[in-house]
Amino acid sequence: MSFPSRRVTLADVANASGVSIGTVSKALNNRGQLREDTRDRVLAAAHKLGFETLPAETSSGGVITIGLVTSDDIGRFSIPVMYGLEDSFGPDQASVLISNSRGDLVRERHCVETLASRNVDGIVVMTNHTGPRAPLPKTSVPIVYVMGQSSDPDDMSVVVDQVQGMLLALEHAANLGHQNIAYVAGPRQDYSARIRAQAVQEHAPTFGLTLVGDRALYGNWSEAWGRQAAQMLRQRVEPVDMVLCGSDEIARGVADGLREANIVVPHDVSIIGFDNWAAAALNSRPALTTIDMNLEELGRAAGARVLEAITGNPRPGIDALPCQLIVRDST
Image (cartoon, rainbow, N blue to C red; front, side, top):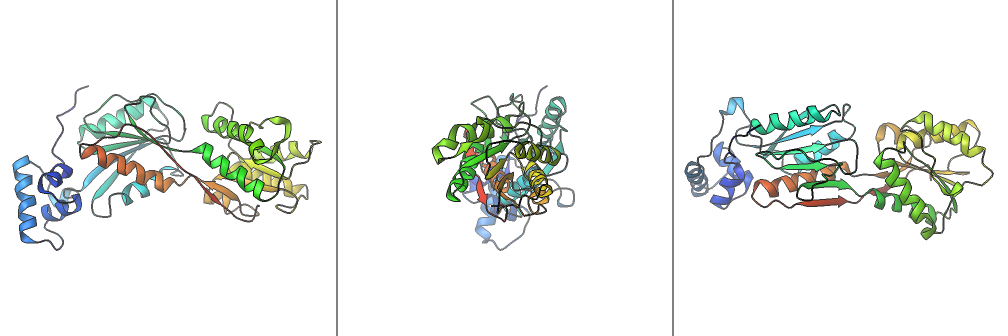
C-alpha cells in the first residue's frame, strides 16, 4: 500500500518561524494575544512552506492530530494513556483520535494505515499485552508503541518497568518485617505474569524474603482465581505472612478468600496488588496496597516521543518508565 507524501505540519511551521507549536496554532487561527510581528512571521512561514489548514468549522484548526490505536475495549488502560497523551501537548495544541483494534492484528494494521492515509501527525499503538511484539509496516507518519514494545530496535517504544514495580513490592514487604511470602500470578503464557513472577522468584532472597514453595502460583487474571489461590495457601504447611499478587483483581479475590476463613488482613496476612485499578483496589476490603503503573505518565512520555519525531528528531529505542508504590490498608 502506498502513502501520500508527508504534509507540512505545525511543527515545520514552528521550526521555520522560531516559535512554539502553540504559538503557531494561535497565529493561524487568529486566537490569543500575539505580537503583530510574531503573527506575521508565522503566517509568512506557513505560506512559504505550503501549510494547509482546514476550515475552522470542520477541523481542529491546525492543532496537531494524534491517532491512538488500542486493543483495550473498556478503557481501563487506554483512557489514562490518552489523558497523558493529551496533557503532553497542552489543551489547545493536540487532538487525539481513538481507534479500537479489538486485539486483532489485521484490524490493528488497518487502523494504522487508515490514520496514516488521513494525514494525522503521529500514531500511538497500544496493546493490553506487554512484552515484545512484531512491528507494524512503516507509514508516512511516526509510530510510537506503548505497553508492548516493538521488536525492531529502530522503532520507538514506551513501556512500564514491571521488574522495578515488583522490587518496590518486595522492598515494602521487607520494611514491614515480613519473611514468608507467596506470589499469586496470572496465566503462565502471559508475558506480564511471567516477568513479574520471575522478578519475585529471583529477587526475594535479596530482601531477606522466602517464597513459599519456591515458585509462583499461576492462574488467570480474575477474582475467582484469587479466592481459589487463597484456599490453596490455607492448605499449605509453610506459614505465609504476605501475599503478593499479579493484579488488583487477583488480590481482591485473595482478600475475599482469606476473610471467608476468618483470616484478618493485614493483622494476620498482608496483601499487595498490581495495577492500582480503582475498581478493584479501592473496592477491596480492606483497600489494597498496590503498584501503580503510572499510565498517564506513560501517555505523556509517548506524546514527547511523537513530538520529537514530528519535529524531525526521532529517538529510536525503548523508554522503560518506573512504577509507584501506593500504600493502603491491606499492608
